[in-house]
Image 1 (cartoon, rainbow, N blue to C red):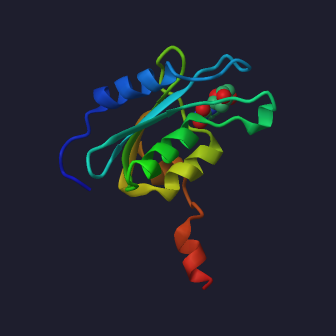
Image 2 (image 1 turned 45 degrees about the horizontal axis):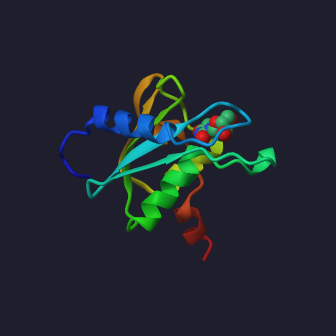
Length: 134
Ligand code: THU
């Protein structure tokens, strides 16, 4: 991990900007997410809902798409907000999405302050588990 400090205010602003692009006509619960990559890029995403409710894409889905389309890499720090700009915890599925692309020691802003990915998704299943079975 780079040794510079994470600028959480920049991430918060990017998450709020992403939230402003949300398509959430059904839940009326817009969400924005932003993350800092190991190489210093900011990636972001918003939730995109669907008339078939179960097909809703969380903000984190768009964020990992943005990461991959922008050259890939790993996530160093993550911030997610609701419509009021309050910190939002990623849902269980999205914790798994983020885990896949975590940098070592990845941090997340949570409702309880900064936590590591391992604290937010303990005992995770991940790519290493697949390797073990080859
Ligand atoms: N949502 C996200 O975008 N990310 C999460 O981690 C939690 C939930 C969205 C999905 C849906 O559009 C709305 O919030 C209400 O569940």
